[in-house]
Amino acid sequence: MAAHTDLHSAQGPRPGEHLGRSTNPMIKVADVAWLEFAKPDLARAEAFAHAFGFATALRTDTELQLRGTDPGAPCVIIRRGGTRFTGMAFTAAEDADLLRLADAAGSRVRPLPESIGGSAVDLVDPGGLPVRVVSGTHPLAPLPAQLPHVLNFGHDIDRANARQRPPRVPASVQRLGHVVLQSAHYGAALDWYLDTLGMIVSDFQFFPGQRDRGPTMSFIRCDRAATPSDHHTLAMALGPVNRYVHSAYQVCDLDALAAGGEYLKGRGYQRSWGIGRHIQGSQIFDYWRDPDGFLVEHFTDGDMFDNTVEPGWAPFTASGLAQWGPPATGDFLGTSPRHLRAEAMALMNGLRGDNDFDLRRLVGLVKAARS
Image (tube, rainbow, N blue to C red; front, side, top):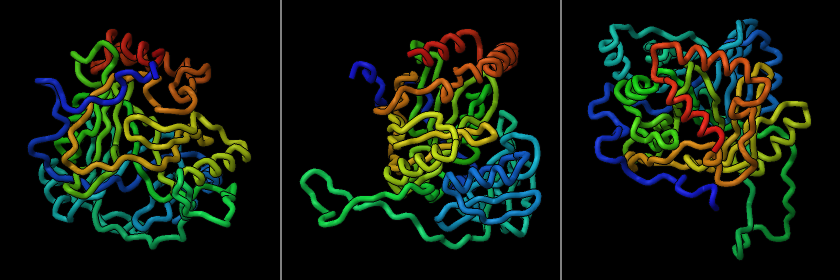
């Protein structure tokens, strides 16, 4: 219990703190549509994707589109190339939003490839990440879904005269849930997503002892008015460089997540951290490294908020990443020996750069990682 003292968010900011939403956003996006990556070996990427629980929506010599069982657009688009995260797309609430964005950004509405359909406006966030807002894409038909198990809770017996035998198979991905980014221009990037895309903050976190300097982590959801939205569709953390951290994909229940993890482990893939339950967002999680080094998450049972919920505030600490589960690993935190050289270079470049990351922030980051 002591490790979790004061880690659960207190509702509401102090006077003068960030309100977590824009008073006059350009538009309000409805959801994240897909993520885009470049990877050198599409066959290897597809093999991991199938073991993780994706289905292939399209495969060519140069492009791989991966989907979940839910209807809609592909979750992930991978193009042949050097290993990198290349951008993301959000779904506009209505077609007219694309015209509003194009006018405001001095851009234009352009057609997407026929394999996707629809139209897009291409933007760039303050960290230089390409961001698309899309509308009218071809809806993929739903696939047969993995069903949650019938469970007996306490004295409530819903399963009688029947055994529970979850198969050790890939956990079928239902949909893309969220993406987490690190930003060296955290303040400008946060305001850009709130002002441009109309997103709202569910939870803020700050480095221990540095709340006076403002938040350094934000969990941001789509504003769908009275319709509940994922606790976070986008999360952003202050750090020395602008980069992808991880992305998360919903599965139907804990058994699917755990059995799917056993399936991945049996095929030699690397678990990064899990299984556990987060504090901010409450998701049950399990993190994996794909063969190209990208961190991906299975999750289930996450919080859903409508737009009446105000942001919480809590210190950012390694022990505060989970309510239960194993301690966060060095691989997940970026402190394992395999990451140290790259992390040291990122820190040196960040401290030399013109951004929000300075020496005091570095001290706070180190304290958070050790706490």
